[in-house]
Length: 190
Image (cartoon, rainbow, N blue to C red; front, side, top):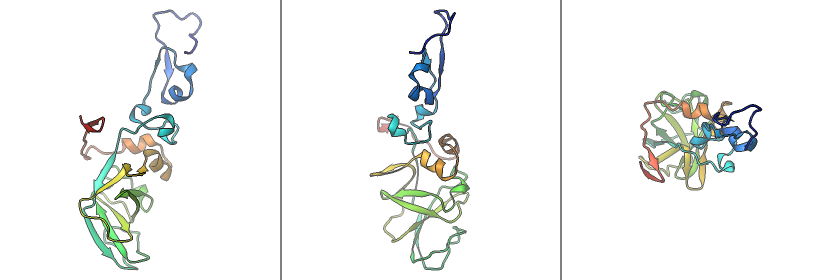
């Protein structure tokens, strides 16, 4: 425990450690620590939260609302800024910048569908993003994870923050009120 300041009385409660200091500086713990972002399982150092024994408390998901073929040289109407280099499939997810998926993720994001990373292509619109699939191997209604894990793959808030040169806190605080919330405790509904 950290040393008390000279002249400190025994009824004085001393606390100076935020999440980062709690994890890295035991000498700053004094009587209490004030964890903020670490409570949510996010890394205050913007690295891998699991390296500090943190478990992310937030998952952001959507689902596949449509799957359509795309020919080489074509651009989907809802995915400005993207032209298919090869034939493939486009999945539409009903989540966009009104939900907190920043426009900076245009052509700069991967989502998990079927436990595999899939690139978001084209412009992030208000209500949807489009995802390129090499084959039509996903089904309508299939879950899509923007933050969280599917199988062995995971996408973290820290990864998303690095992609657009911001911090993990901004990523999770940006999830809008229109996104439905489901609260869980120990893997089950709370």
